[in-house]
Length: 277
Image (cartoon, rainbow, N blue to C red; front, side, top):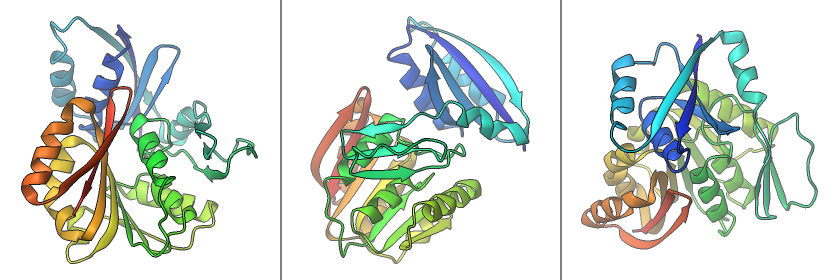
């Protein structure tokens, strides 16, 4: 399966690169990275729909931003190498360092997670993954039952195990993400993570103490009722993958379902919303 690489030149770059990234993620783009003022984004060739892509570009007309792009076809055997060559370590305070197998460990960090960057979402580079990791580092997850929904690389699930959890479910809708998650669990010597391929219906009838869902606003909205039903009493729900301007919309919907507002955190234009049952 070939992939398409889009290199976007955006003027002004901020905040429009984040906004474009959010829109593209909703039409199956993934593996974003920024380098030298250019936003790079990948999508599998079979998932690319020109009409959806053009609709997103058209939505920026008249908003004071210029967007141009170059499109490259990356053959299957080479597409991961393109991503790997731009993977740099992610440092979260002095608590956590997320590295690739070809990086050296930095002993100043209390925890290190090794992620093989195979285009699955969740390397720590994106603000939403950073926010989630930062939150998990503050939690005692011993004797908790955890769900990582939209697990991608599995980085959140792996961090949960390193925080003491021994009962973790990781779910992603993409088979290649599930395979990547399993590989990363093995690399990090994780024995308490069950990785499954599917959607939110996989958790019907199951209960969790804490749910982490780093996806996008529209999917989160469609999942909220099931998250509520799958949370134990006093359970916590961590949502991310949306802009700070979307917090109220999600909060109002969550409270209408029966969830209680706990707190929020933001990084740049992105947000994390914490709710409780």
